[in-house]
Image (cartoon, rainbow, N blue to C red):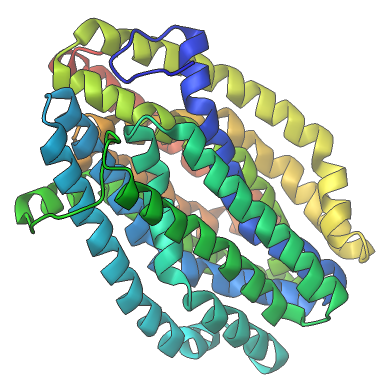
Length: 443
């Protein structure tokens, strides 16, 4: 059943439209998770800690792709809602080209800076060598990775969420199979993990280019365009929250690792890495829903359909609430299996990971509302509010609590830091949603 952005969305239609984006985000999260799983079990915890130490740096430089995708798709979908299809394709093309160029430049910078960043994060000896290998190989395909992240949103705006899902699934399966071959069979170690991930990213980044360039009859077409500084600035403003989220996550991740190195050494970093892998997949449900629903919100905002905005807002809050409860219960149940799969070979590390994850998973009751709230304002083309929510959620509050809570609760304070920061952000999100309901007519 083909569902168009212009339709009235029942719960069934909404779920059918957004589920490809949810699964797409889960498969995207699996990239690093699978690397960590194979490296931890076949190479060892030092290499595992290296991936967790340098990955925030890679994700920080890749943030441009998320910004262009979410911020740009909000403009493109709004333009489609206004009935300007050709103009929407021109905006889309410009943003894709800029993302690709930015990816190449950031790739060069990342390759050059990886060793220095690893040292700054406390790596030396074998840990430093592993960080450098994984980071530099990973940065080679930064441009296609950024394009993959951007196309996740543009596929939804083009009413092709299932095609976007298919691309990510194929890329994810490629990564998993090659991880097994390169690490478990060929014994290439941490280099094999990086190469496997890069191969998946090449598929996720380049196939969409071929599709949008050849399908001229599609809603969005990749072709001739011209530079429009106002649109680029608006896209960056709209997507600033996603940029801030990724940059902040990288900074905060580095701070968490520094704290954990002081409190528990490599074991602490490895335990935190395992918890973050689980968090990536669980939070991907909320991010996927937000990415999948945002173009619908943008379209109806552009078309002035206030009743449908109210309908989408109510249904979204209901779905986020249900998902939060289910994910929290699931996390409590699978805490032991998750810890055993990643670090079951080390009893002390297993116990630290198990305890930490059970404390951490309270986060899932709260963070869905903040993730959706930030995305909702991006879809309404209010990048400022979206950025404020993300800035407070992922940087200000987290940096505060990660240094304060361990003083009173030791390492358990680190596991509770994210939930505490999300709770503080929730009050901000609710305040903005209440104050802006009349201006945007969603409640």
